[in-house]
Image 1 (cartoon, helix red, strand yellow):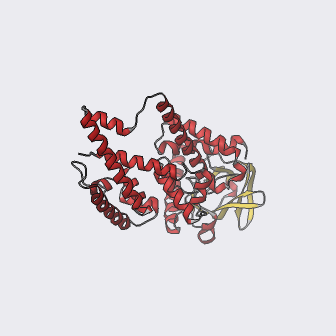
Image 2: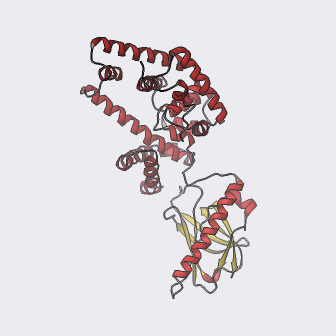
Length: 185
Length: 211
């Protein structure tokens, strides 16, 4: 296969896939180009039946790296601030309020970290996906498990959060946060 | 009082730390090895977690190893898909015929999505009504396996005998096209073979009947 054939074969499909995954068309074209070039250089080492997954990963990985580099540049330029600082500033005005807000954020983070680290690995994955608004069915499909398994593990996780962190944020319940009641998809 | 945003930030921070702890985005080699089931369990768990923790990579969890066009469906589903494809092809034939009923040569467009595995048990199932007396037919076939060769040979066969062939063929828009003189197609069972050198890459069986 020549370089031109390789491009003709995969460029259009790769751009379409990246757009389907949420990339803007211009970004998708650039990412696809970079991924095709990078993959072409390693083509001999890639089995043909795996080429597509390889290309997709290469393109998405490039996107992650671009994003990380851009964020690092913004941080260096002082254009971003840690989230807890932003929260504290946006939620309160007085030094006392800011201190309370910082303490609250730190307490929640410590609680979330502790619970997440104690949970089985599968459950952590379910929580992260659920937090991104995946339905039970989507989670089950992505991770190759049964829907009831997802539901029961998420339910057990919510009790752990409640035990560790107490009442859920105002207007919500831990069950909702883990996704039990808001299966929107 | 905490807010949902606090929860969001806390979980996002935890995910970021997990990404770093697990070594950052997995390499393409790791992902294809994971999707192929070739990684030991501990490594597979790490790659799977990273595929979840990077939203950009999460769709790969359900991505097939092959090109999207390559669909490995259960046999029954494939039959349904093929039946639907055949119906669409026949409708396309009718539509094309209606538009090209003038002096221009008529064509039969038959879009297959078959594969060699199916051939062994399903050969000859696909029937096309040939309009009589046409000068040429175009037989088109969508390859199941992503084309990787620079060129292919297409062979129209009947009873194992090559009736018509074309060498040095490359798929156009992922589709093989064989232009066959009308005299070579008559009622009976045929196969369109796609070869690379001496290797049979794919075989598309079909049957022709007259109206």
